[in-house]
Amino acid sequence: MTEPFEIRRRTGLYLVLALLCFALAAGFGWFAYDRSDLVLCGPLAILLLLGLNLLRGLRDARTPLFVADGHGVRMLAREGWVGLLWSEMGEIRVERRIGVRFDPRVKVVSSDGTKFYTAPLGLATNVSPGEAEVQLARHRSAAAY
Figure (cartoon, rainbow, N blue to C red):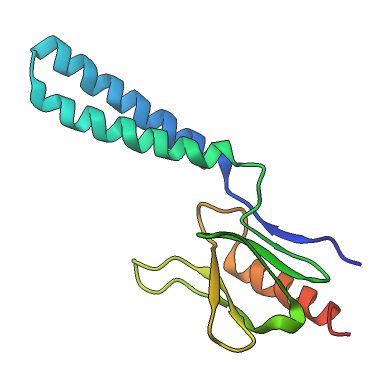
């Protein structure tokens, strides 16, 4: 049996961005204090909230976003963990980046076509879309009983 294919967050990226947000917030905080200007508290609050939001990505860094193995796939969805056997899937594909707005994703469609689930790919994860296509094809073909 082959090793499971996992998509994980790039924790280093989340850490660097969070530290950058906190450093910029500290700068705005200093300016707000030094100049007694309350308008500078707006960017301070926004940068603090953004930095705290990025820290959430570090908190669950050990948890994969998507796992494919010989039995099927498991992924973290909005409603919690979702698992599908290979026989329960109608389609699994990698959707490439569409313009600027839509990042690449792994899309899994149920066999009846009524439900679909997605997992992110790209800059914030450790897997490229090309690598995901190869790994998913390898795991799906290995699971064809």
